[in-house]
Length: 391
Ligand code: COA
Image (tube, rainbow, N blue to C red; front, side):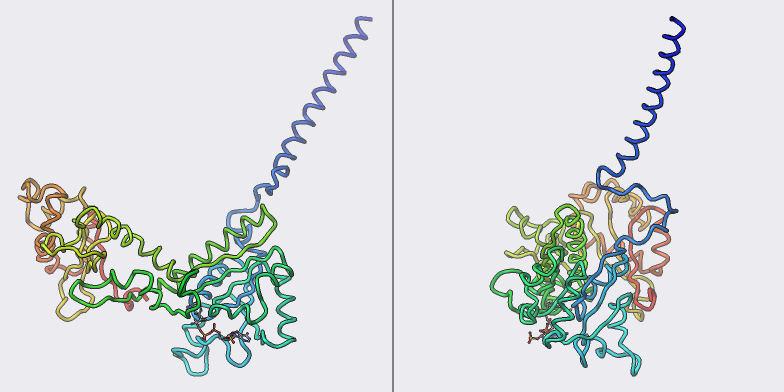
């Protein structure tokens, strides 16, 4: 009897162990799937596809801002179907053409990694094809003039009815407000977004910058908006509209100047050279020449050869932690302890003179020599590199 009991106990113990094993196995397996997320890929790094593989973009973009956005998405793996106007195409195909008979570099540098199709969006057959594409795609990206997409019949309501998962992303010049119907190009956005009024020298006119912060900058912002909308769609199952206004994009990139506008209410901007020069501040953030936009003063200084080479200059930052190294380097060791120079606040009213002294030293070296010497001492400097030196 006792023997039978013992055998039964052992049997049930073994069964329990088996079940426990099963349960553990089952739970582990289930866990990976039950939270809705795929199990981690076992493929080697770099071989598990690209981030946006499987995402299909109906690319209605032209010129620079929109194409910048869709090209980034294409680089990430999205399938971009670029729709162009029959007989005309994206206007940049023929603009600034470098090689006769070929699409311009302006066009190809913004539209590589995409497929192209011409469709007349105002023709009945074209509309039919577009409706089919709307049903097939995940995202529609456009940067037409305000109202143009609606005039094609591709209203948000129409698109959303055909494909509730569709994300409709747009670049426009301005957001809601008095200018929302205006057409906008790069420099219009730079001017309206606060960049031009804060760029250049105090005694000169406002300046636009060569970096395409209005076009490419807004395209970058839009790409992030689209990726976020795709991520949210995983949760909601629903598409949404994403809008980036170029004025807002520029203002976002010029936000430190907006910061300074607010700071002006509380007194002069002491890190601007104008403060040390005794020039009073007006009511708006002024143009600051080559002053640094942050808390570590900087300026562009001449280097050896500046008389004949327009790019023989270097940006020099007098970062506080390396001030003593700078003093030794430029032959001003006394500034390390002089109360007029030893601390960052003491130096602020003297920036012009300090940079003049540093320049006396940089002018004895090429920009690359300055780079070499300073970086060894952790002094942040940036050579002015011409495009020919980078390309
Ligand atoms: N089939 C038929 N018509 C088409 C078409 C197609 N495949 N693609 C475009 N069109 C039509 C548009 O519907 C529009 O017609 P409509 O005015 O009758 O509605 C027409 O072409 C012109 O489009 P539009 O966007 O107004 O081009 P534009 O050359 O006159 O203006 C911009 C160019 C860039 C100023 C303007 O598109 C804009 O302000 N875009 C938003 C801001 C922006 O992205 N600017 C930066 C550009 S880098």
